[in-house]
Image 1: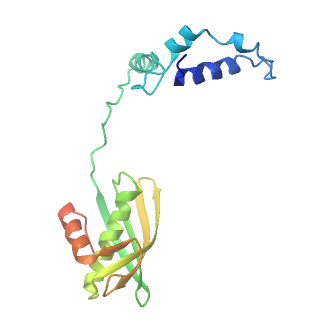
Image 2: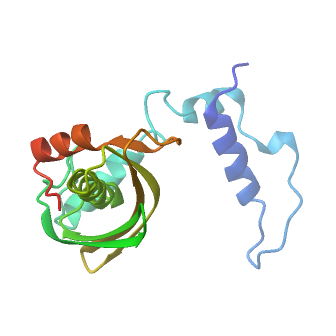
Length: 181
């Protein structure tokens, strides 16, 4: 007999059905309580589907009855960022903090990228060529995304995994329409 994901579903359903009304455990009737192999296979998940057969139709029917439209797969809200400022603060010698704010970000990655663009341009303004990312804290409140990012700046490529070439990064930011300092 083939084992498929549906067997797990049926086994879980069988265990759930062994619960009494008051929540106490009722001993299962044994393996005989499980459906026969043909029923298990008919309930098995389709390898291409993410839900049990019939479930998406039921959800679509319920949404239609409520007057809602089901979103199409791959539908995303348009990206319409509103960049709302950069504050730069020199913490110590080559350690710099960037606080940025924006609306319309899709995820925290968008506001982190904004901070990275600010760091890249600032690095060039100070006459350096490279920066290394130290940390970024991201928060979202009422649609306003904020990032507090810290970078070190240097003349030569610093050690570490999260380094940026300030010229290359600034050019990419300008091309993407992300403002810099």
